[in-house]
Length: 583
View 1 (tube, rainbow, N blue to C red):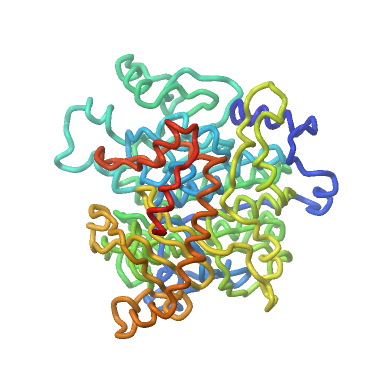
View 2 (view 1 turned 120 degrees about the vertical axis):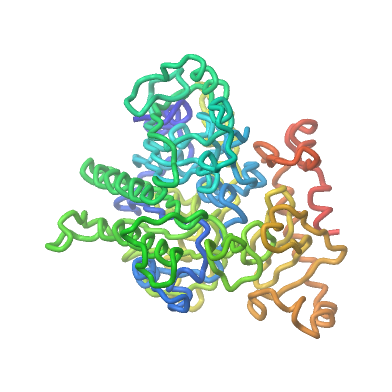
């Protein structure tokens, strides 16, 4: 099956040897056999909820997640993003949320999502012969044009929002008028396949038939658009009752997809996105009391069990594992989560030792679990202190698949390709780094990662901070606590704050140390290289501008420089974008 016009064209290029970055015979020979790729992404899971990090301090262990760490690399300095949409978009595109505009959390009816000109990892892997499937939470837009099966995935079975949005229709104050739900309510769990046939319907019912009510069909068309080159069925709403077992639905489809790929002798890229552990947590009777530490611990153990089932599927077949596929040695397994904990919902929230939480500028909002395993290629039992980001997986995994220079190749202008359409595998700036060489040598004492630092973008498109090596500079800080971190604005600092993330990894010096200001004054020179790195990075936006401005839920808040750069300067980013951060 094909995944829409862009990928169909890309496949033609690949098959005809025209696609500039299609691997040469030498590159393919080096890979021997393209590795399978399994990415397991949790939701809002914190460091302290994974026993490979917290060593059981919370009263339960996660042995299956820990297995990935024991058989591969565990990162201490691994960065997601500050929210669900941003974390998922940076992983699948390799571009920062500022470049894609995917910074704000997506909600039902929001008029934004992933753009056609932002290629995904799935779209890049398709020309290499991969079959691609995404299962579970997506959160990159709910219009049909934003769904995974028109962005490189052969199959998608999952939900489109955060769990608390999914259960809103069951609130006692939710309007009873069905027109409200039809216009503003969450879509159901969708079951989609990519197609080379174009569909004009907005959605099909679970039995595969069109919506019989013409008025409802027109509302759906206006809200979601035509399906286009995909066939999607609505399997029903994600109700509170369904939430108790929906990850099992997603897991079963994931296992079936992987098994079919192996039987068809195709390398696969599978992205499994659990709904655990986003609030509100609803558990079934089978796991109730499993951890002895409340419903949250019970749900974490359920999640860990699902990870274990996926790993077991990759293992060799045996009497105890008759369905094992025996492909573990040629499968890259990644475990991570989208962003830091949503701690203000505790006890229905994750835990982290770092300052702050999701949607703040502090490490607690961005620093997440990060584990990777590839037997025989990535050393086992390594704890890495190098900086790694969601952004790095696109160039790293493409290198593993035989395309080591994808970052440079994607910069080529689209005009170098034959004029038979406009594929999106061009004119793209990847913000990630190829870290394959480091991963393969992570057990060597002199091994160094490729990433020099990290940019902390918030959901308004601002740059609250930047990390350069061990040093972090904070330009704007979120001073609010509780749910107010979503309500209150970030506070600009006339003089930035400085932290050393080795000596003060939890960012407590400015609030708890008597000596912070004197320490800061003696090191103020460190602000200069940070400002230089910010300027160099944001200068790339002149040639590779944002696809769209960050979405603003508050009509009074506008990111003027970004919008002006798109509407008035054909995409060039004005200098004020970084001047405000480093002045």
